Length: 397
Image (cartoon, rainbow, N blue to C red; front, side, top):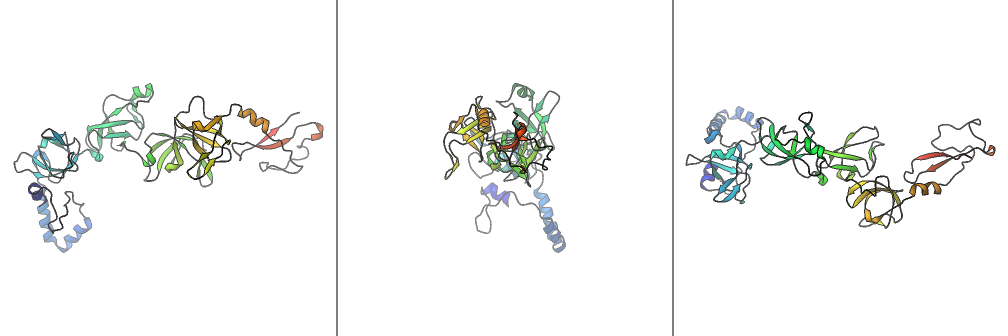
C-alpha cells in the first residue's frame, strides 16, 4: 500500500482520513505481541508472515525491499544535486520500468519529501555504526599502527569507505598546530579502524571537544578529600553523559593521572601562558573584578597565576578568595613579591605552654630552648596564598 501510494500519489497518507504522513520506517517487531498472536490467531499470523516474505523479495541489484541503503554517489536531477553521496534511505521497491529502484531518502538537498527513482549502481549498503561517506570523525584513542606511525587521540579525519563487519576506512588529517614529530607520525594513507575507535566530530556538552586541553576551575573533592587542585591540567577523553565529561588530569593527590567525570563548570580551557606571565607569577587586581551583580575580587587583591585560558585570559588564584579567569589587562605584575612577603611577615612569640595545632605533643623542658640563653625561638606564620598551610620559622641569633 505504501509502495503504491509512493509511486502514484507521491507521499503516502493515512487512509483513515486524518491525512497524516505515513512513515516509511515502521517500528521493530514486538516479541511479546508475536507470541500473543501465535496463541490467539495463528492463522492470521501465518498469512501476515507469507505477505511479509513476498514484500521482502529481492529487488534489482540484489537489494531487498524496505532495506536500508545509502547513496554511493551524488544523485542529480538535470544539473542539480538532489541527494548527496552517503545520504541514508530505504528501498520501497522496483520501479515500473524495470530498470530503476524507488528509494525514499531521509533528506534531499532540494527539501522535497518525494521518493527518487535511481539505478542500482547509485546505491550501496549503509556503513556500520551509522556513519556516512565523507563524514568528519575524531579518534577516541591513540591508535598505534607500528613503531613509527600512530594516530594521536583527538585526530580528525573523514570516512572514505567500509571494510566490512564493524570496521570503516578513515583518512586522518594532521592537526595544523601539531608539532612536526606528531604530524610526521600520522599516516598519509587511509586507516582501517573499528567503529568504536572513532566518533562523529561534534561539540561536546559545554562546548568542549575530544582531546581538548583543560584545567580544573576549582578544587575537586571526593568525600572529604581534595583529589584535584584548582589549575591542575587535564585532557577531555569523552562525553560521559548529557551533563558530564570524562577528563584525565595530569596530577592528583596520588601523584598519578586520574580520570574523573566532571561538570562543564568544573573545568576551563587551557592554553600556553604569555612569556612574560609564566605560571606562579605574583599579580594583583588593578581594578575590581565583577560578575553581573557583585564584586568577585576587589582591586589590589594579590594572587598567583595558575594557567592560561585563552590569549587574553589567565586563571588566577587570589588570596582568601576564589580562583577566577581574569583578563590580562586587569592585572598588574608584582616583581618582588617574594621578598615583600618575607619583609612583611609578622613574628609571633607563643606563650609558654601554648602549642600550634600542628604539634603532635608538648615539648619537654629539655627540648625547649631557653630564650635568655640567646637561642632562637619558634613561631607559626601563615602564607598569604594558602591560609591552611602553617610553617615553622626558626630565627637564628
